[in-house]
Amino acid sequence: MLSLRIGYNRFSFQNFPREIGLLTKLRELDISGNVFPTVPDCISKCNALRLIQLHNVGLQELPLWLSDLIFLEGIDVSSNEISVLSHSIG
Image (cartoon, rainbow, N blue to C red):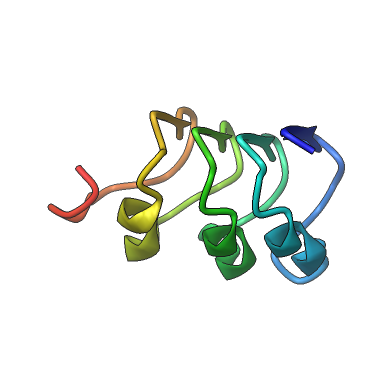
């Protein structure tokens, strides 16, 4: 699977499907419109990701491991509550 769009499915940090971390060839992930104060750690195992869409999920911070996704070309964090970006990410 190369692309997964599960936006606006009423997922929260507690009930997010951790099996997504098994999708190591995933290139695009859209989890917009769900409720996450931070990005679920299981996504860090999807190391082929090129695009992550996190629009309107209530993010307060971005995890440092995002900078480890070496193929990541784009990330949409619009309409969130992020106030500070780490130098390693920004």
